[in-house]
Image (tube, rainbow, N blue to C red; front, side, top):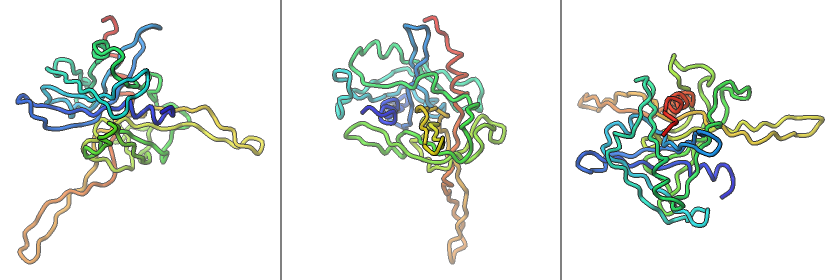
Length: 265
């Protein structure tokens, strides 16, 4: 599995959340991001949404095992993290639904046992990219409605379009909107764009270097409240209709939180 898209499958993890009675009550998506500290060291963070982790007393994440530097597909290792609230750091802005958990030490506890990839820090978009515009294709990786390849422990990749202008803050918040079906379980999914460009030059197509950027993290889906009228009783029932629009917090909010973390331990 050598393509960039295939490698991105292994940056994404399913997060199971447990309450104080050790009851599994929800799940969501998270992804690994690597921040360099110096030329020889880095820190690795699990990035997800606040609402995925906020009530969890413990979490569990499942990795594919490593075999000689390659994924041992189908063989997994469950990693429980007790007292997870002690390790979770929330974005200080209450309106920003982004949280991280440093897990550098986790990988030190399981040397060479876990196969994973981490999104590099320089893949975070800063939204000054000239190629970035509205109506561009995006894709996101996660576990929509808890659906994934259980046999091979792999998430699903879904596609969509940038619906609101990404260089502007939608309704004044650091988010943009994607035209995509976003379901529970997709919360925490990383959203990517391939900014590789093709230009006609002297009658030929010149293909630029592969340029993948992390645009942000899925947080919510937009719904429409409907009222159904039951005939002939006249009883009204409230329903919700998924609009096929997702709310994505920009990668700049992830960078703000990562940059606030200490680098000396």
